[in-house]
Length: 155
Image (cartoon, rainbow, N blue to C red; front, side):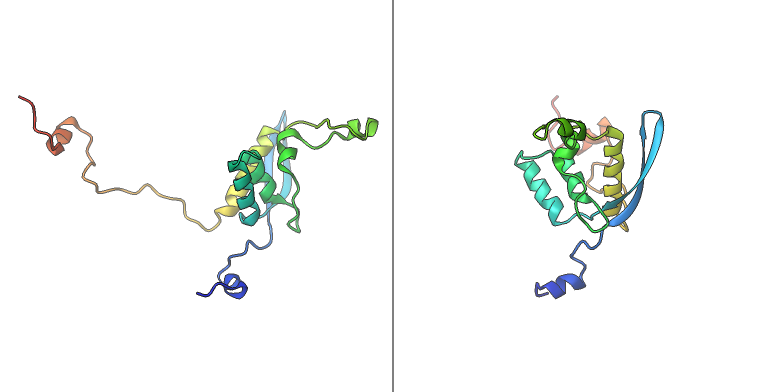
């Protein structure tokens, strides 16, 4: 195959439009539900992974920020929004230069978002099943291990 934009389009190498997902999570006594849009993993997530590997951002926050978007594919969060929260509007109203943030994203919401990202990126894929190996080490009994040993037995 010659690598061209047309050949990449034909084989589906572009992530396409975001996928709409409904998520639910518990916050205190309440169960909340929201509609989110998830961008399939692609360039943005690769950049996020490189930044995380270089210690420039949190890997989980980066993955969420790269994947969760609006209907048009525009990011909803930055990694800092997830780890520290957006700027506090009440504090900004008092002081336009305030850097106070609302705090990290709720843990249950974080898990719900990661689950949605996982579901979108594993659609149509069969989960790996436990496969048997035929390496000659299927038995773990001491007798069969001794029989397979290449060392001579000591008297």
